[in-house]
Length: 233
Image (cartoon, rainbow, N blue to C red):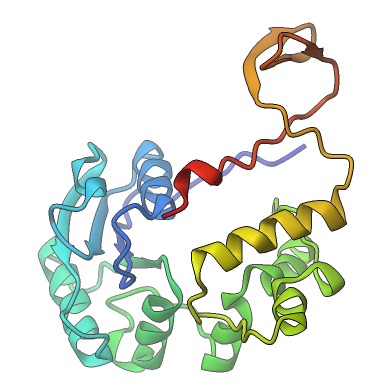
């Protein structure tokens, strides 16, 4: 049984995202989770007019620095901490939502602590934990809920190497190439995948019943929908 989580609601948080992605779902997810737990939430994102700024859980939104300079971000976080709490001994917890915003404060931990709560991690550890697949192992060892991962022959790097394309963490790829990888992965990893759309999901006994687009009930315990074709651009 998962243990019930408890939080120190007296420690304010600052969501930090330097990635210029106004539709970053992780930002909204962190805002809602922390806000619903009764924690004071602030944010540093690409713009005060970002969609997440409309969240009822956010106390304030600041625009990210114009550059990825660690000095500029450190100064902004220090200023937010000063505006958030009057007591210099009362810390603020920054929650990084992308790789750059995680590495930048880590490089200036000596100057930002104890005003900001930052883990004692080397840059090498930060880089190791940046990838979702690499983080899955430690998460499982700590009994943290985590999604299963598939690597090796089905990985994006393996698919790209066969086609002479460089696929590295943080290197953008054409959307058509990534879409073709998704189709290839499906054929390799789940060749019997039922690609019909799920029309409805309704409670049934101890679980749920799925109704496919052609009206057929699906008795299986789970259903998946890729849902990426409409989002290609």
